Length: 415
Image 1 (cartoon, rainbow, N blue to C red):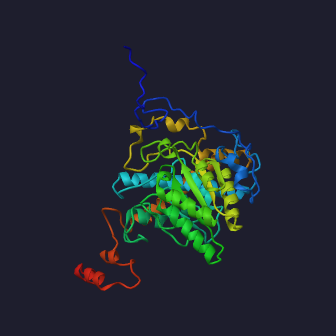
Image 2: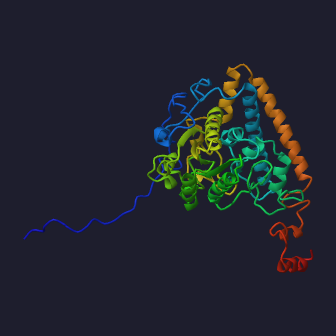
Image 3: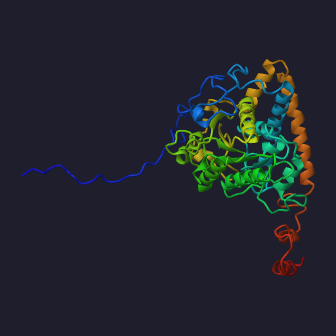
C-alpha cells in the first residue's frame, strides 16, 4: 500500500509586511518611483475622478534636480511669495531646534519636530483663505507659522506657563487658534478626519464660503475614523481637502503596516470616487499648486479631494522616540526627494532673487527672532519654574453655565 495524495486543506497563515531594511542595513528607497518633474499633467478643476485615477499612483513634481520650476503645475507663485515661503520654512526649522533643546533642558515635557516636512504645511496654508479651517495633527505647526501666529504664543503653550493661551489644558505642541483656522489638536489620532468632514458639511448647510482641511499621518489611515470620513465626504460632496502626510514612518512602524496592499495611500480614495493625487511633499511649489487645485474644487461645490504628500520624517517621532531602534541612521540622507528648504533655496538662487550670503543672513535673523520669542515666553514660566496657569482654569471652559457639582468641586479646591 502506498500513501495517497494529501487531501487535507493547507494550514492558514498571515502575511506580516516587513520593511525593506532594518537598523544597520543599507537604506533602500527603490520602491519609491519618482517621475520627472513637470511630467504629470494638470487636469481641469472639474475633471471626473475616473479620468485621473493614474494620479493616485504617480507623484506631482515641479522642481527638477537643477532647481528649475517646470511643467503644468508651475508658475502659480511670485518670487516674493516664494521668498516668504522659504522664510516660513526656515522659521519653523529654527523654532523646532530651539524647542527640542528646551525639552532636553527640562523646560517642557514633550516636543515633536517637523524636520524634513516643512513644505507640506507651510505651502498648504498659503493655498487657503481666511476663515477656512484646518483639523491638524501634531506635525502641522507650519500652518500657524505661515499664517503669522505669534511664536511666543506657541512657546507659551509648549511651556504650559501662566500665559499659555490654553491654560495648561493641552499637551505641548497641541495648539489651537480659531482666528488662524487651526482647530484644537486631538491626541487621539484620526478623530480630526471625521471632525473636518462634519465641519465642512456644516459650512455647506449654512451656505457659507469656508472650506475645511483634514490632516492625518500614514499610520493613522488604518483607523476606522479615516474610512468613515471618506464615506461622508464622498456621499455628500463635502467641501473638504483630505490630506495624508506619508512620511514613511508611523510611531515606530513603517508605512506598509497601514498601507496594506493598496499600493499607495492616495489609492484608498479611488474606492470612494474621490479624486486622489500624490504630490512631492518636499517641493514647496508642487504642494501649493496641488492644494490650490483641491481648494478650488471644494469652493466650486465639486466635492472633496484626497492628497498624499510623499515626504520623509528626518527626526524622531517625538522626544519620547528613538528611531535608531527601527531604521538605519543614514536613511534620511538617502531619501531621494531631498530637503524642502534646500530645494526652494536652490530655485530662488537660480532665479537670481536669492544668494548663499542672503540665506546665511536670513538664518541668523530668524534665529534672533526665535530666541527673542523664547526669552519672552520663558519670562512667563516653564515646566518647572516661573508662573503657571491657575488651578481655577481646570474648572473653566467646559460648560457655558457651570453646573452646581463642578462649582462645588472648584470651591473645595479653594477657587
